[in-house]
Image (cartoon, rainbow, N blue to C red):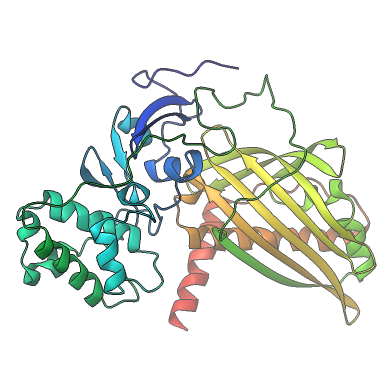
Length: 395
């Protein structure tokens, strides 16, 4: 295992840096790539998913947390910048048994609807009442301007503003401190917390016994339906041969066949100026030859801190003289690959599955083992995905 550079040393993009944080009263050390933002570290390395990610450009305010007592956009702050900092997330504001007055007021005024912006609203309103120019003496007429840094798409803001105004009136001498800052053990995900660096090419980690996906909603969902000229049995022969299947995936290659229908592979993904090389494991968890149906779980990570996990379902069904190939994927993204925006990442993934379908059709029609599919042109993928999105918005 390679050593992890100290936080103030010059490091390369593929290296890991140890960062010590105090999060909601507990000290934790995480090893992160230098460009991982604080929101991803909190969610994916420490397991505190109350901090939500929206635009990832610092506009929507969903990811607002307190850094050394002051509100900050967690999607704009690198984790390495926070070495030694005191972080408070929405989990630290209050607990189910002892809610903060702001949380109680939000509930009383039903200052939420879908709830996605609520963590950002709570942390931003805490910063306003604790650190704002008028403190808890802020006038109700000023609240729309003062709270405009967090965007809500569904409530109309009235309940939010009423809740903040109530708390301001109730605590004229100062806002109570966060109430859930008791030391506890913070467990990171995938063994990423602590002082260890990521795996290196010289010392690959052992393949997991099974691939597991994160709980909760996926980052993006992809549904692709492609009509192929090849008969269904010929298409199924390609899908049922994992070597051929991997060759059809753009930028992917099969490295090693493992026991229990597991496969070690490598994939290259390029989005604009960012080129990522993922090493990962895929596992076939359902194969039905009679129904021509296949389900694959996959997990991959690159040395720069990006990670992608996927639940992929492939099915081939007769369609006249040809085949209808269905590809459905639930994608879980983190790190740099997710910073392009969840929707755009989903559109690019859809384009890659469309290329996959074309490669499957070629292999099924010719009977030849396909050559490994080259990584897609990143500029062409981005522009085609953006054009599709513009057409849908203008339709």
